[in-house]
Length: 225
Ligand SMILES: C[S@@+](CC[C@H](N)C(=O)[O-])C[C@H]1O[C@@H](n2cnc3c(N)ncnc32)[C@H](O)[C@@H]1O
Image (tube, rainbow, N blue to C red; front, top):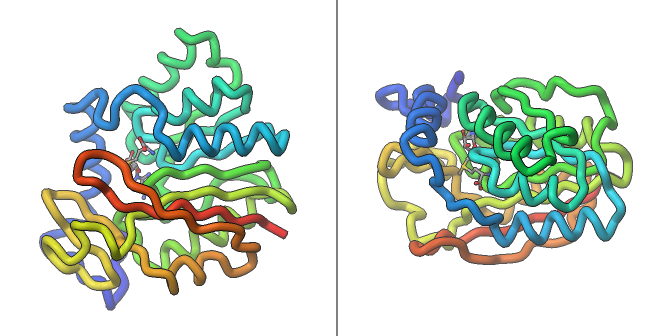
């Protein structure tokens, strides 16, 4: 990654995140558990209610929500820059008889998404936007999501926000990015949510919590007009 001038990268922390995620997910096969997240369950039912079929999942990790989306009858393209967990998702989907509707792709979202314009009905992303991505990189990613969604398509993503207990803890990298325990997290404020919604219709921002810490998150729903 090329950090912006406002986001220095002391010790190459941001650049090392991909390797850090690969190693962490490898060492913790069920890092976030095997059950779907609340956000994943909600997105699966919302997409089903709207009769959407082609879903792009960004930052699929070990696939706890990928399996839920597949189980809801959706066609899922699961993307992550950690390659080995994606192989695990393929195995789980195949074992569950759901592999026929799954595509996986190893890709870094700091690069343009390798999909045609208007090729998805929906985009789902649980805690990818809140990773080591600068505000400018996030704005570029939101633009890419807009491009690959068809008109009327829905984007649901979740992020940790500035009300999170960890906000301000650890090493301050600028641009609301903090390193804590080796992980770099971008804590969102409302102006960033609004910036990423440019060109979309922002339908909803809901606060929720996850895990024992707990992580304090926003679930953001926006639609390509
Ligand atoms: C907090 S985990 C969430 C995983 C999954 N969505 C879940 O909730 O179980 C974030 C995921 O984003 C991936 N990730 C982080 N930065 C990325 C990037 N620049 N491009 C693609 N994937 C990235 C990590 O490898 C990791 O799997």
